[in-house]
Amino acid sequence: VPKSFSDALPVLKKITDHGYEAYFVGGCVRDLLLQRDINDVDIATSATPDEIKQMFTKTVDVGIEHGTVLVLHEGEGFEITTFRSDSTYTDHRRPDEVTFIRTLEEDLKRRDFTMNAMAMSPSFELVDPFQGQKDLTARIIRTVGKATERFQEDALRMLRGARFAAQLDFTIEEETLKAMFSCSSLLSHVAVERKRMEMDKLLSGPKVSKGLYYLEKADLVKSMPYFPLDSKGCECVTNITLDQLNIQQRWAVVIIVLEIEDPVKFLKQWRHSTKRIRHVTSLVELFYARKKQPFTPYSLYKTGLEMAKEAEQLFSIIEMVKDEGKLLENLWNALPIKTKSELQVNGKDILSWINRSSGPWLGSILNEAEQDVIEGKVKNNSSELKKWVTQWHQKYENQY
Ligand code: ATP
Ligand code: MG
Image (cartoon, rainbow, N blue to C red; front, side, top):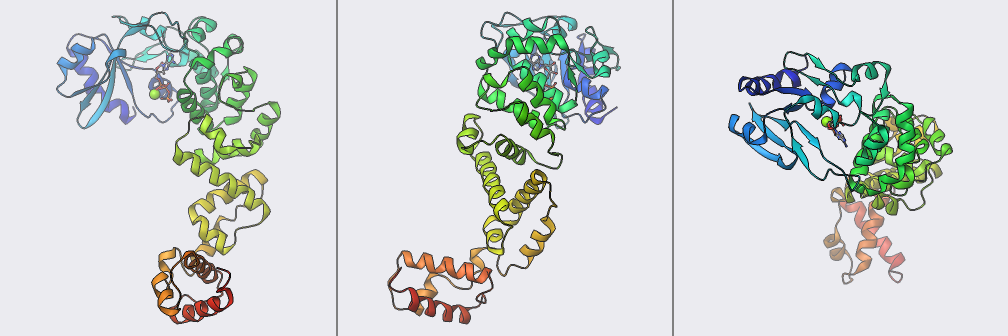
């Protein structure tokens, strides 16, 4: 039994000791049966949020309107959600109201896919009213109940289906896939942030090409932020081995393979964070620069070793050439300085050496000194730099 389950057992025990039911539910049960790593366990109970709060001394209301209470037990947090059913959905994304109920089965019925609609008792008995285990074994993604109805209720489920296909390398069952296609336009009702979160998970998966295949096949792309995926794009991604790449590199692959012209605009449409946008666009730019020519000591210095290695890896994977990351490390180690602060000359020195008042020229001369040091044209010591500065000044006095 994985630690995340055994750690939670005392919490479930306490609930059952009070005469209520408590189960492990959803993704953690699925992942346990698949022997995948388990991030966090979700607990479902017949007790109401108020009843849970009376049982435990330390609780946090994290989502009380959906019936979720966070219980702190021995330094760990456990999300406990009251059995609930979701009422009608008029906006295709959120139930109009949630109703607390006392039976597990009804709670499982509101869940999206059969593999996510299983529960496990504290004594590890499986509760599986929708044949989730059978579908897990057959590696099939199938909605609980009628697919079109379930997607009309919450259109995000379609994108979740594609992302589970990418994460688990599963096949989407035929009726479910058909319903995805016929309901695809409803996805436009869902907030971009939620779609981005699912896309991040899809792109992080070990079978990205499978997830993209379903996005294209079910025509979900038309209801997402701009994502010009066609069967050719899918095929291109299939031929790229993404295993070693982080999520920023993977978004960069998307931009490069789908030939996105304005990466900043694209990433903004997907509501990525500023930090993420900066990282991904740098990678894309470095990729195209690397295509023109390998890193030089100066471009490596400007880029920084970590980013340069990420770009080199991206380049090697897309262009199917050897990853020269090791070479970059050697090049980096051989750099005379790693940052500008290590330069043995600053503005004050220069002003004391030559008779000229401060101005933009000072920045230019320092940048050139920095580049010449990196390129080995001048040694990084004060006397050499002084000679270099004097010569520079004689040559360029009138230009800068
Ligand atoms: P992950 O590994 O990404 O956490 P997960 O299956 O645990 O996968 P969550 O988003 O954490 O996914 O949701 C937990 C459970 O809640 C799911 O397993 C599923 O039973 C249910 N669920 C989540 N989102 C939906 C939804 N949109 N519609 C129906 N049920 C959902
Ligand atoms: Mg989860």
